Length: 494
Image (cartoon, rainbow, N blue to C red; front, side, top):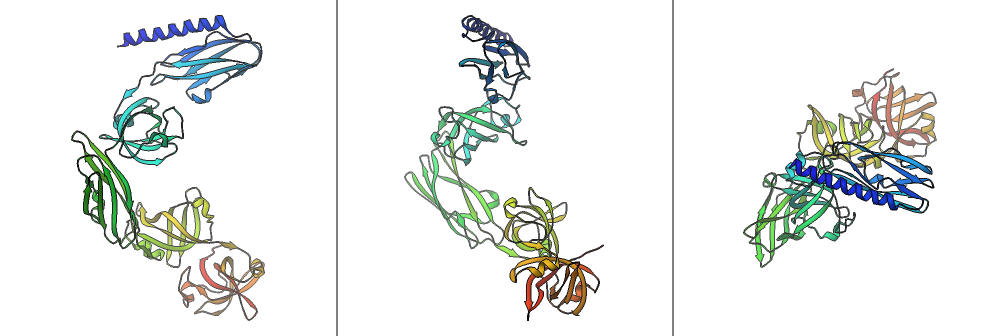
């Protein structure tokens, strides 16, 4: 086999040499190259060519080959030497470059080895080397982008993500023209290029399409309410009957009511039970056969979950699971601005939030009051909420006493104040003065924290002379300025 491959390589190199001699002999009036076909060894290496130009020159097209290194892509008139280099390649590869000078252009073909396309299963693609070109046959699943053509190819050994699908003419962003649907059997060809450790096939070419004998034509009620109800899937099938597969983890809440088939049309009805937990979803598979091969099509079903109102302490005490909780509190620390990892605190305690969806758009900052929805999770035994959704954000502004007094009265705008406690007038509700270097203001009642209890001021252990941080709105009573709707955040330690 190696002997035959050597003979083929020798023939290709000989062809390149012949073409190069012809090109050099004919040339262009103001631009000549020693060879227009450059062969690089598969194990890696370099090859030089010489350019003779009557004007400045430039090489373009190398942006399509990140594997190729060119010693220089532009130069002056006269004679120049260029070196093309590449590391060892798993498979053969090539690129077409353009050498331009004044109004003349010379094409350059750079090849490294001979392309070898390997037929493989999904498992073999996952285990195989990067940059290698694979031919895979499988079923189209989970189409996630209908412009670029991003989807999963599935066979008996596993699945591989396809990132980009070329149309019949080799163009990108025209996936819809192929008419591919989930459940179709296809043969594709393309290079493996992993992304963040996940194997994928990039910009594949579709070589063969075997249309599925079954597809989901439409659905009714695919987003069910908390109370449950009937979900219907309308199927078109050209195979022998219809069977349904419900995932094991969904069988306890989802069941088949009936399968009615009339010719090629079928309707499958499902009953979903009331959802006492958090949001849930499942993927239902429909199957048919022609006696030789099985065909499948899938649809998604989701059901809204009940959201449990909870204090931070109640959330911490809950079990890990999918149940959705709604908690509110003051943001005491932002641990990661990219992912939205924060700490929040209410009157009952504080908890870590591991990730807030669309955090960058929420404009959440320390001191703000947030209402979040998410499941109870934990990491190494420490409670946390994950993948939270910010339902509400109350923007809180940190101000001095003087700045606070300049604000207009507003029952919805909260301010954060830090100062020293004096003149405690009521130890039940918490009426006192808070002062900083800019002045003092009267606090009319202080809750034990966000959503905390009133008439519990003594439980905070605050005495005159303590430095504290509180939050409240700008208010007044009989023309006397004061902090209204105030709640305790923390004692400030010097």
